[in-house]
Length: 464
Image (cartoon, rainbow, N blue to C red; front, side, top):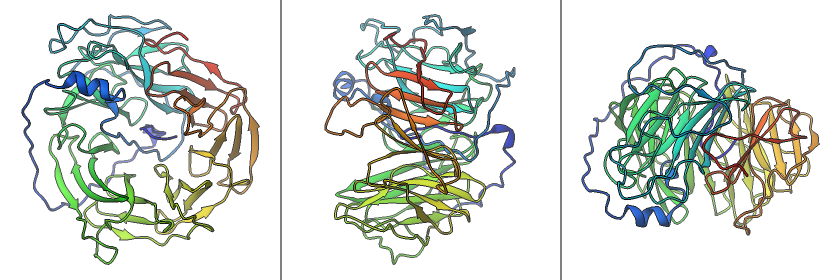
């Protein structure tokens, strides 16, 4: 579980959530002008164009989930399922794509992978080489990759103009969202599906210009877009909130460079940080501090407008380089876990009271720079090279698994280090994405706890 955005929510376990209290602040409507000037230059400068916003999707419980193929809804219908093939039939070329650029379908790379249960997986693919006119798409499998359904909204299977898909996230096996628009200007449109991609409907727009905020939905109605302003190891925070899928937004919180830990109800300016919500009301500010200040957590219980520092047992050693939380929290009820790294050391912070307090759990051989995949509050998989260090009981006992492929090296000195992003959904079932969001990416699957991995072909991508 890392970086981008993934989820392990059982939609059948979802209960009606109490709405957050009315939050102060007016809806901020932002209008943008401009055209496609500079698009090519921007595209060449960053191959990972679709990571301009960070999509964060949270996982509360592990479950095997099934697809409910419903009818109805408005928006884009999706084509029929496909089996191990790629096709240009999904939708049509967009009228606002670059008419002078050649259309390059297939040959896409795996950009985002979001699993649910043992066999269900959403995959967002993009062409990372074409300046414009490259293929892009959303694929869904419910049988572990044996067959796929093209869930791409009609008209968005080719990028260009105001049809660049910048974000993709999934909340369940049936609910997902995308954000698309011009690559560097203009409104960014949010569309959602609640029937596994059969239909998509426009629900709103982002509250900021492209790249301005980190988008997260906790259900199809409630979401946040967080603006993080970095400044030499410190960071301002502004939180926008929606309760209607993005149709309107409120700015509910903002700090300044003068905000300190003594400021009541505020997130201090010091340190880098990430903002993660686990439901419409409860969110966490998780710190990463370069000055060796240890582990710091702030929690909000009213949708992000007021924050309280939580007691955290500090790590046993904090090197001069500092450390901090390296991933989002994973909750099931009151129990939660979040990965933490400090220098070359690894540990997992856990809570058993909904985040009121946190304490560290240290793995064996913690001096190895493990990459931590938190599948649930109790199921953790730590990887390095071909080794998996595993626990199914929140670190009370551990066992090792030797893989037949390199899972992660953490060799940051290499531009193309072997390994990739590991995401387990059950103790036995997991996915490995090699070179995610890069050319020649590859998807693999295990069903035996990580001992053996097989390549899974995703429609639209290159057969390697």
